[in-house]
Image (cartoon, rainbow, N blue to C red):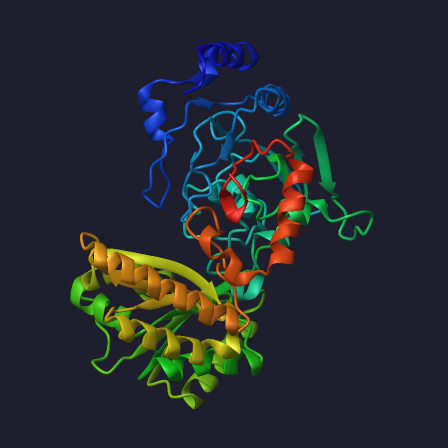
Length: 462
């Protein structure tokens, strides 16, 4: 419980209209996509960077915990106030696109800007912001940077970190820092921006982002490859890319997802369809798009594809993508709760990784439908359990731990895009040795010696 004197002091700093400790606000800011709940003691809406600095100075002096928060759409608990304290919510005031610089092809935004709003603003002037997490219609860019969000277009265009040119942030002691430049090249000093990207609000509070934009491609077409088996589809992924294909997206759905799409949504697919690969190709001339599709079709069929479908207009494209958009809700036919992890492995390891993941599922007696961004090796693994059965939940978490160990042994990572937060924090010692974990703790201490910013996340101390 935060003492009344602290609430009064915060009201003096930012105005009573920007500080809330009523039950409605505490509940509204107590959860994220994990559906786990931790109530804060107060919710504070800073109006600008100076407000953020003043709040941090006060809280640092009084050792009051702060959790920065965007839209709360994360899947690993990064924005949960697990230690109470203050939620520092950016969406109310710090939500403006400050500039779209056509000459340098960049955007300067505040952290509360919605991802899709920037995409639309860029497209209005013929530019393009590629990172497209599934939450793009409501997640904030500050949250995207803090989690290093990915998306379906990552196969060709990369992820959030590839578009962060510079940022402004406030350290816990109130110091305002700038990291990075507007320039394409910058090798002066340490890459502080790189350290803050994916730091999940544990080191500093982001207040301004300078993001790279690129020209918007003029032509886009969608495709679908239908395969008799998961193994055929996985081999087609890395072999088609090695053959010179450069798709915007290459999304994968296994045989269990195909079964779920048929049974729950009535999507018409061939009876013997064992896996799907769906994606887009784009380019500035139509011949480039057609060339990419030719490479994909040839490679897919050489690797067992039963059919290769091209969408020639927006309606046909939406029909193809409908299956991928509904992969996640459809698999609830296999269990009331899904233990969803976004593992990532080198693309060449995808066939072996999935084979062994299914073996782990069979060992514990669980269905493990998989789908995701095969073009960049990032697969969403879903261990399906009965959420009301404590024994199944316990066994499900054991299966997840085995999957994590398998992925690390293959040179992969615990998370391709969702981050670590609280849900994956117990597994950090699988992915990193003691020396590496101590280095993380040293970086945390250098930025935040009083440990007021989002403590307990990413396997760092409470």
